[in-house]
Amino acid sequence: MQTITFDNGLFLESLLKGDRAYCSELIKNELKNNRSVFDIYEKLIKKSMYKIGELWEFNKISTATEHLASAIIESILNEIYPALVTEDKRDRSVVLACVEKEMHQIGIRMVNDVFEINGWRTYYLGTNTPTSALVKFTKEVNPTLLAISVSLYFHLPALEKMLQQINEEIPGLSVFVGGQAFRHGGRDVVARYSHVTYLSDLNSLDYYVKNLESNG
Image (cartoon, rainbow, N blue to C red; front, side, top):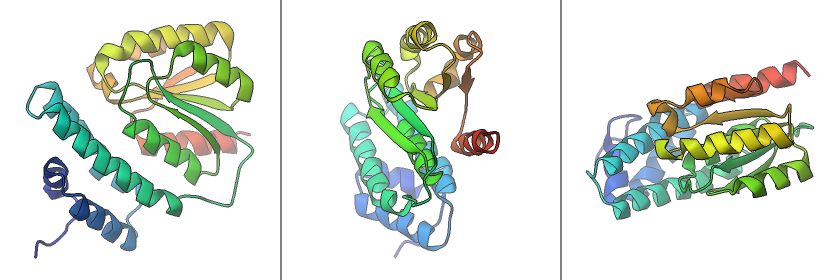
């Protein structure tokens, strides 16, 4: 029997083969061994999905294989979620969404879980969120924070459009952005807005959220 270790490449290999059982067993074992959710998300899931995204982008794997791996990850996130829910709720809320035409939602789902761990109320809108719909909904719920994800670099213009409209219609709202797209640039877009913050990883996000809470 193959010994399961934390980061030995077998997780990525198993995702590409569609071996959901192995991937799920590995995650469960890590949780039993008190591995932090942030470690699992950053060092295993995020790292693997970034690699899969690169393989797909350069036509090394098919769209079907990329979808298969993503489906396995989403099923694992569903398995983990019940352990994240806390009864210690904060009087804070966040709206989370992907930009228009962005169909990759694993990153923003993990971001949602960070807020859940910290006791925030979350409004998770998922993929391909039209800018007008996002602005309208955000006005209705009046959140503490807005989180936006961009996975593919050619969706950065959609982010710029979204940030511009948010700035015009909801001035002063704190926004943070992230996603694999920023590995190819895009931080200049963020820098144009004083209320928008780019965060590169979930540990930085957790620190950011806790800092918001400590500052009232």
